[in-house]
Image 1 (cartoon, each protein chain N blue to C red):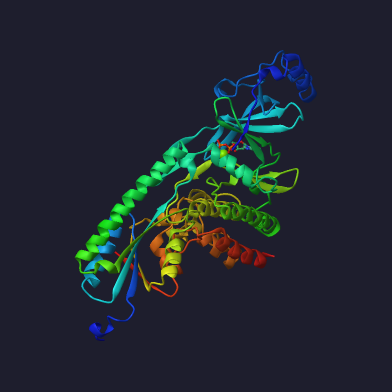
Image 2 (spheres, chains in turn cyan, yellow):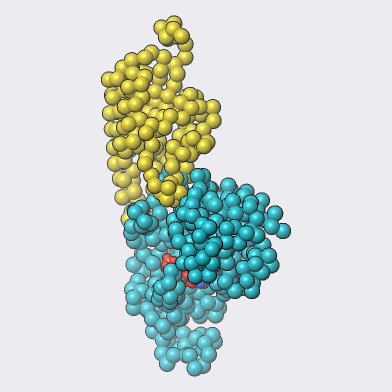
Length: 329
Length: 158
Ligand SMILES: Nc1ncnc2c1ncn2[C@@H]1O[C@H](COP(=O)(O)OP(=O)(O)OP(=O)(O)O)[C@@H](O)[C@H]1O
Ligand SMILES: [Mg+2]
């Protein structure tokens, strides 16, 4: 699947590497010496090390961080930023290995896997597309697939949503239509993936980055897989629903927040109005923001505890979303 | 209606979709009790083995042996249920079994396309008792069959 990484350390001398480093790194950041590390032992690869993959030397920078569900700034030592010393471009090196684990949602237990092969497969399928992160897979000396991704300069949908508008109403009338249209495009990207028989596996609002270079959103992080049952894509649909509710509410509208800011609104809600899985988040947002039109709210209700039918695929969701969008404008 | 006089006409064809759960077993027992001994019925037992993606295995070898084990298990079960139906009064030549392997986007779609191919008039499934969340996250064959079946009846056995 991946290309063979020629890990020949002899390709470059230390002086040659330092010369390249000087091209891309400000003088005060140029290290005194650089060491070429073997990629098969990723624990040993640190800031200022060089790794050579496919003949290209990369200067390793910091680990990526991800703030998720309140755990702010979780360091990911398996996702590192690096500089391609030949072009100066920033890359993301991802060195996750195969692991299985048990997913849990409430009392529901399901088999999950983190698979570098899956990410590699998807990188091949989406090559050249503006709506997915781009990258290549290389086999390291130990036969592990390493992914080298183009770094996407830009903010996540999660962050962008929170910065738009002075109030929810201002946001909804002046910014949301544009955002929804971008979200529809992102759902179409997932439709493309599903049409190729692949799941995304981890559809979250922080896995959609708006690329400054193109002004378009790209999905990232494809290495999760879940063991599906009756319907292969239901779990991905759940992820899309959560993102839709998030952008429509301009962030999570939680029962906790309402109890502080709008206790009357809270008392008008019942359990059917909440997100079917995260039952502290409101899905029936029209009860909180009455100017949300019915057709749009009906889409949200498919992800509420009161729903009796669910979206089984992106086509069903897209049809309803597009109709809801046409009424917004 | 005179059943004897009907025996020359085309049999009514039922498709029973089974997996390895007790719910499927209930569906088999129900059909056996309900129709066993009456002439004019034909049954196809269908089991679909969902082929997991390569991601879930350490090697291709592990994947192939998982599928083979599963196939063996399900064909054993199909034979066992076939015998159950024969013992409840169906003639041997009126009970077929079918094992499918596939990577279906939706199991109910696969069941319905099989139903369409063999032209049977009734699809029978057992109902899994799922939480709403489970149905939402992973789908439900019986709910989807009820919503999507065309030109046939669906029996959901509790
Ligand atoms: N191509 C990219 N461009 C810019 N940033 C990226 C890119 N890929 C990943 N990142 C950043 O690195 C973080 C971690 O990457 P990624 O989500 O792929 O890793 P992960 O370990 O699979 O995460 P998770 O914990 O969600 O499973 C991302 O949340 C994002 O902030
Ligand atoms: Mg991630």
